[in-house]
Image (tube, rainbow, N blue to C red; front, side, top):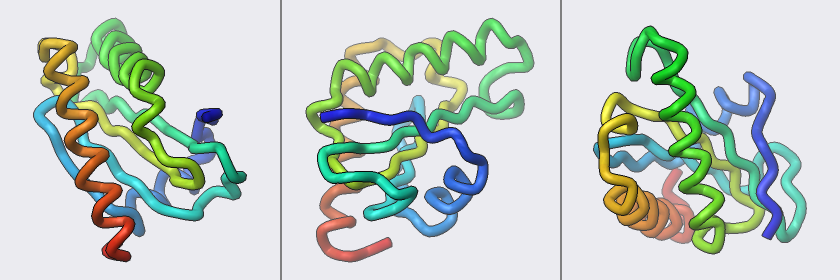
Length: 121
């Protein structure tokens, strides 16, 4: 499956406002079906790391973003096609064990996909 990057601010806001949300200690995932002109066999993912939530230091924010981005690369098999995702990092994204983050990522996606299947958004 091809994973595209979400780049437009308007698309981030749409997914966060209208999508389904599930949280873990290191991040929150928002997801919305059939958004942002995603084709069959593609998913679109955006990453958000704020100064307020993570750190005022750019080094820390970039590290958190790299860790979250790596999660989506390693676990892209769990991401559904024609779904838009926004992943918002939290402070724990810097210190959390990476294997625990992987488990949490799969756990969040399982719950989000169940909600999307039931039509709860």
